Image (cartoon, rainbow, N blue to C red; front, side, top):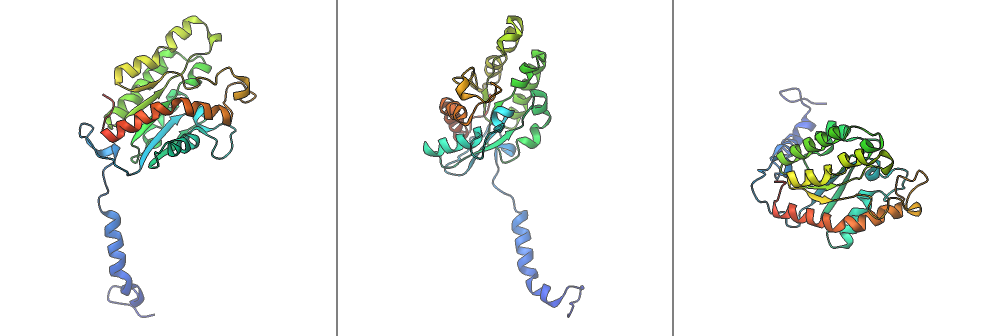
Length: 239
């Protein structure tokens, strides 16, 4: 094999200009997305891809469900059926996750390609009877950091299990509406609305929705997700 002046093979040198061009294109700046745009500057999304991250626990992850039966998959399909062909729902649900876990993985779970977030954490906090003050603090920090990135947020609320008593519920249940008010978030008061307590819509544990149950959740939350999409198109971040 013949070699050129700097040790490269002659065959390699023939392709060097093309390789350099590819490298230059790869290094070129890309269109700014939500993570690095000015939160105060309106953006025109048009028909470009809108990525919404569903940040949650097993309720969003699709615990024991089959392919395309989880919340993100069913929501994306419902949005397409409603005419939102340019919306992708990224499943960032982790089974067993608490609000503390969600906060710890926030930066990599909600990557630079995210345009908006559906925030659904706190159910495991309540199931474990964690101090509601901790849940509030974690969710507040998540909302604050997403606000700093200019990302619109749909907050999917949760209620404490009744068996924990009125005092616990009185401290836990107001967290979501109050944070939504404080940060200007879109609020869906109860993620399991229409499904909680319905035996036929939950798995054997009575906690996790079946595929049909997820379908009901998707149908009920859909108008709020469309409101979130409108916020992205209008360049509206949390305020």
